[in-house]
Length: 562
Image (spheres, rainbow, N blue to C red):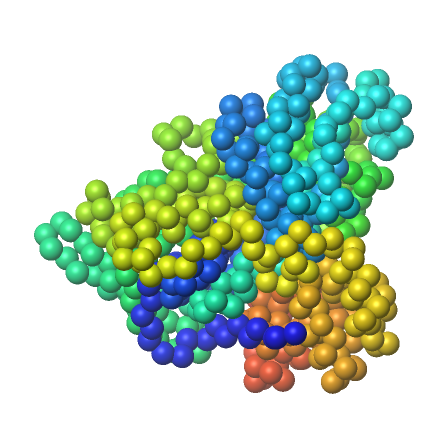
């Protein structure tokens, strides 16, 4: 297999058709769409790819059942369409997951309306099994009896004497890896990606009140090298930072989004479940309890956030709200603070409508042309959700064509809804067939079958390159952590540096391998990883310690009692 090397260090100045600011899934999906159509594309990210909101999700690819309450039928249909496309394009990372909605004494809306909503959900996903392998079929929703409910979820026996409803959505097993599949699909077609790169200055031409944006002067924060990037069109895809970036360009306050803070609790399993459960609280909020990698992922919360996005941290109040919701809904003390392993947090950039209610705010995205505001060559993208990111990328490029028809003339005709993502075993191919084939044809004695399955799930066809690294150096088959011996191996660290543009310990631990997403890393494990990285990145002992301390600082250790 061809090993695609993602080089993210700034080498020199560049000129692009399209320059994207912001390396979350929104910016990366736009880059993928543009690159597939043959345009020269650059993307700059001040931290690492997918480091903020894109990684702090419920790990779902879903239609948004709750959005039916807001009559967002168009958004739900679009999301369900894209759910199917992502499942076909990356079957190793996007898989069906059953959900149960138990009928509780305080359930709202009433069960008849829930059933009606689920049947509407089925209707809006009428093509959900088109070209989908049988093993990934998504069945229709149905009512389940109290006996069926308690058989699956005996922990609910005390809180309900009724049954519930069963429906299906999809789980994004590792959103960080899914983000990279979009990035690599774009890089394969020539897109350039730069992480840990900040904007030092905007290159503009001014005529009176009119501003024409020509490019940006950037600095690589790791090497210190500066460069100038120019482009025909620049896209602001900075998510929660969209207003801040616009204000820097215009020199004036800008308000286009409403920020919503959401946390999850990653905990020891609180339910003996293989299904996700959607609960409604007595105060009419909702939360999921989702099975993930042997843990429970609980949340999200949804509260307005008005502070600087760079200062985002979970608070004791955030944690207590979710703890209270869980314990008042299920049973007293089913979840205690010492069961919490991590507290993922992110900001949703919602479209500003003048109202402050983030819970009921739409998850639709909006594309802003700034010509009417006197800013030319700039487009901003706000709102949206992970599931619809591919469609968003397509819509943004089509909007660009309206203003720059010459770019459309130069483009390739291509439909990304029918293309596999990089590393996929193939568009619409059954995952089990590839897994069985890979286990038989590529297995090596240096790793266990469980470790091999784990690598296939994370990397798809790319896992072969990691096996090659192990064959060349068998010591790299050792686990990253003895706490998770069946999961990550040291060869993945080498792969992250050599092929995936990882430049910091945090890049590797939280967004290239799985280890850092399973709770606060052990300091000895971090030291082992950092020392291995030091061989490739020329770190000295002081740099190793700095990287370890910085990585730990990203975790809310002050709130974790375990």
